[in-house]
Image 1 (cartoon, rainbow, N blue to C red):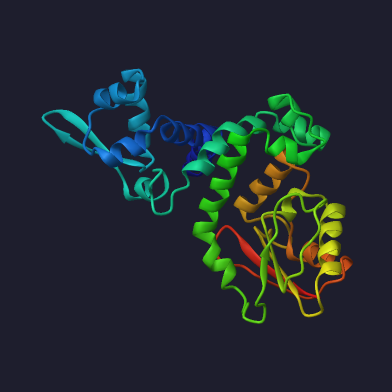
Image 2 (cartoon, rainbow, N blue to C red):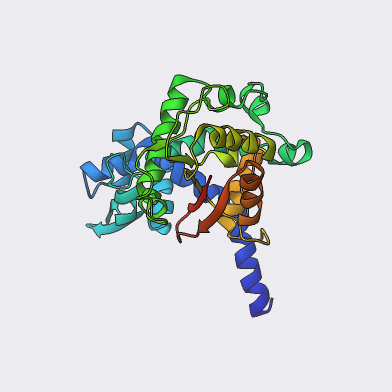
Length: 297
């Protein structure tokens, strides 16, 4: 093969094996590899396997994959490999990490990953895959997503973890000083009354829903708030042509697999805000995963 063909095949092979990379990281998290190595550094694979109650050969393979992924580093001493966390693992993959994403990774492993096994059916049918994946009817999205108390707690912890990384950027994207009373909207907002506030925060909510339900929710907020009040939306924005960023595209596909909505570009958000009665639409890309949209009544 030519050099160009070699490069193309290398990229192609990365795409083929991408799901294995994710699952290896999820599994190391779930087994407690990173937490163990945060409390006891420089352990051999057999000691790690014994402490975590796993097969030693399988654990050695998993640890070496994590080394290649730069999640672990290894030091040779007396012909034995001693493993320890990298800074990335300590920061994001341990339960106690200052920017831990542990709960969200477990949610993605147990729920998102399972639903994506039915991506083909989701695209054929245009609906989420909770029925096929977990045997739960998908007509009530709240019941499907929060199918148990344990799942709800894990999901909420995961959202908090994401907010800990992205929150400052979206909250400082605009001057929010004109809004003394701020309400973070959550719960069953299609049934519960909307309280009066100067600013409503909708963080990772609108992407769950089709346009008609987004317009319904925003209309209810518009009717509940005073002139000059605003809505701050936290979502990942697609480019105007919808051909990027890749993370936003993947998240949009995930909304098909797990919810009823999609990620949107700024023009699409402007349209649904306008239909709900809001004006003075602004958006800002933060450079992180999540971006900010501000509209006023």
